[in-house]
Each structure stands twice: as C-alpha cells, then as structure tokens.
Length: 270
Image (cartoon, rainbow, N blue to C red; front, top):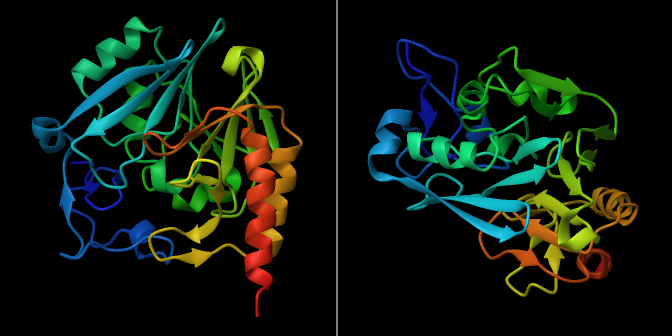
C-alpha cells in the first residue's frame, strides 16, 4: 500500500495498491492535469533528487522551499511562538534533514493550510511531529484526499490558535480559503501569511485576486470585496505570499486596499 503523490499538484492520496486513476484537484478548473497526462510518484522517489531549504525571514519566522521546484512550487513557513510553533502551508517534500532542522527550531505544535492546492503531504508532516493537529476550514473538506484523525475541520470565519495566532476565512479562491495572522510578527506590527490569496504581484506594491491562477480565471467582484473587507479588519504591516520573494514588507494592508480598488475598476471596464 503506497500513498501516491500527484506529480502536478503534489497532493498525497490515501494508501493504495495501485496509483489512483485521477486527481480531482488537478481536474478542477482552478488547476490542470500535466501536459504528459496524469502522473504519479512516491515520496521516497521525490526525496532522491530534491531538498528543502530553510531560511530565516525575520525573527520567529522561517520559510521552507523545495529545490528544484516541484509541483506548484509554494513555500511553507514555520511560525515560532512562546506557546509552540505553527507550520503554515505545506510542501510535498519532507525528509530526515528537514525534520531534524525543524526540530532544532522547536518542532511543530500544529499545522494550518490556506487551501487544497497546498495540502500535499500534510499527514506525513503531522505524523513526524507527534500527530500534530491540522486545522482546515470545513468548507474545503471534500478536497482532502487522505483523510486522517489528525485533521481538525473548523467552521465559521475565525479560529484562535495559540501564541496569539489566528486563522481567518476569506473564501474566494476556495470556499474555505484561510489566512494566518501573526500579531507578533514585523516587530509587533503584525504579519499576514496569505498563501496565494491575495497573490503578491511581480510589482510588489500590488496584489491580485484570482479564481484560477494557472488558467487565468478572475475572481468575481463580490468575492474580491469580501476578501478585501475581511483583511481590512485585521492588523498587519507585512504580508508573506505563497512563493519566494513575494513579500510586501511595509504597508501590506494599504497595498491590498489599493489593489482591490484597482481590480474592481478593471472589472467594470466595458
């Protein structure tokens, strides 16, 4: 029995004798099946020629990035608090070297993931750190391809965790899309960890909002307004996006407000 990984999105499926016939996450219009068709591999195979790089982004926050790129190519974060550490978002690759380094930083008390595209090998990460609970919004429950008891589905729009951390549901890209708020980050000015909604643009003065990033499907005006209004209510100065270098160091909330206004004006053009 093998828990196969989808090569295109990195999602790990429940153990089976043969690889699954399809990946529902990739077949959804927000993602895509790879150009070579549906392909599968194992975690052991991934470990052979990939590694994770862990770097300090600021005091109390480390990013984790897989090299060379695999699947969607997102970065995960380890947020350190005096009450334990949160792994924010997830990577398909977990290795003995990664486990050792994360343990040296205090381990993982809990895991939270923005949306289904980044669920990847969340169960493997949980098991390596004492069956750490995985907090996912219940609205995205149907996208979990490897159900386990360590997954804690929560309802509503806000979940308080520990060390001042909270999860906030914004909807939009996925119904249960959630962001993490770290009030102690940015020297007490607050940090938002947003996954890919909003997505930090190449011009890092701006962000954008999409229903599908690879297929260029915009988010509707109603959803953008809801995301923007939800984030306006939070206190933060800095924003860390899903991908390396996609970080807004200063006035991140202002960038979101300005970007939402610009986006809505563009949608109104006829």
